Length: 186
Ligand code: SAH
Ligand code: MG
Image (cartoon, rainbow, N blue to C red; front, top):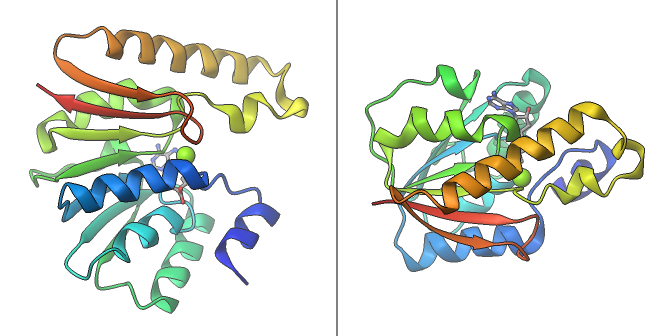
């Protein structure tokens, strides 16, 4: 089955087309070679980044075992397993001194602040996905969910703080995909 069709049928929140296009364009034009991804899901975004060039390497972290297994399978089938290493664990438990050209953050949306603090030493550039959180906010069945409301509030606070923090230079693309933020550590 096509990976996008699988994502739709199993409600896997893979990146929206324009968001992915933005990410891939950044990787291409900035000659990005080493990437850390938080939130693998079924490997869709990682595989798309890896396909740009054979010398691109991605470490990607996924906490959910079902997703992890699906990602491993998809990556192997696409013959991209030499370029992509998938780690089954909580992103915040991943410790490394490695330097990445880019960290793509797409795991737990309420933990973006903690991810940034945890991985700040590992990269000067971060891209965050889902800062608009349309995927769920626009889903009527979840609109009155208190947890979702709290989560959306958390995302908004993170966004406002980060955009006004002199430590970072940010470019926020509200209308690209589900809201994509490019952050550079000054
Ligand atoms: N980047 C993927 C989509 C990721 S969806 C793509 O565009 O193709 C978000 C994923 O993050 C989910 O699979 C979820 O299980 C995972 N996740 C949530 N919390 C996490 C955590 N603390 N550590 C690692 N992964 C996490
Ligand atoms: Mg996302």
